[in-house]
Length: 485
Ligand code: ADP
Image (cartoon, rainbow, N blue to C red; front, side, top):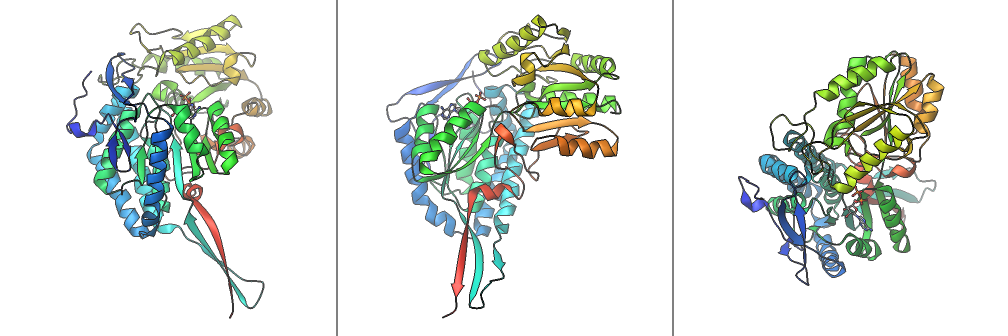
């Protein structure tokens, strides 16, 4: 299936290592398909440990020159890369939609969001300030400087094929680190298009590489190789745990953005129309496939029926289809396994007494298309209470008191995003403080942007991305104790 780009040179089917386009050492490849049609888009190199080692060695060689550039010089390169992303936003969005499925308008939004991390960290590059500390002894002076941690590795998911790369690469490059990215198997073409633009922007050879191929083999090398000093991973909690363990023998710095099980609480004093709008945004964006997507709706018993009815009407206005079709709001799920998980959660809930309010089954369009679904009468005994669905399923739980709902919301090993709607200011503070989550949306269903710290607590991860905190994960602190001679 062809992708009709204005600039066909953005579509690359080789990996990008040491500033060169390369195939796998053994010539092997894997397929990239359009989830909306099942059609083949192309093949990319199926690389493993050997090619990854080359990328690590190239990064290590490039490191000393890159860190010696002034922050202003590194900033200019990042800024240029950002500008090129915006100049090519239509093409990048089309590549993204074609391999990932999300509606074109959402893909364009992602490209802008992705570019914003390059802009932000181009600015932050110049603000990696140190400290001077008053010394306890008269003949000593204490100075604290921040230095780049070294060669970094990033393993990224398919749900945000562009933004999860720039959110890691932006701060790494700003801090003076080289970085190697292994994109998800489903979405390597967006990553490779970003590499085309990085090269054009003047990112030096080896400072940014994209290695495509076998996740286990590449991951084992990136985590096991002592030259790599930091790993940043976004993906599922089981893989995050594994990678963290693999990083232990060489004591790497680790950032993890893992699964969530976001609660969305509608109190009886909520503006219900605003809550429904927030619910649609937080649940059905990317067809429910984001780690901050609402997984559980808790609705106060007094407004439960009214909220369910309004949500049913709003869900009825969503349009399922190919992301490239005008007006579509719901693309396909990424693959068959994703559809099976949504089906399993619905089947389990119905067997335990839940009712279908809207949707409930595969869409007539076939492939990964699924009807936007709402279930009522959902209880804590059902799978959706504990597991992340990662699909367009809104389960509605009923609650009676604030204490009860806060307890239910926190009753999970995850702690990424939470949302709630209320207009009572003391309740807003009380609940915001009581929720054990890294991010809380209050009277809003959309919280992500480049200036705010994104990240979780508990088993949702470690570290923060974006914001002025985001660069901390890519620097190490050095203390200089200067004696008098
Ligand atoms: P998802 O369920 O969203 O696909 P994964 O955690 O499986 O989440 O995938 C996120 C990223 O982690 C992808 O780039 C994938 O290739 C990679 N990955 C999966 N398994 C491993 C592994 N064993 N080692 C290294 N990377 C892995």
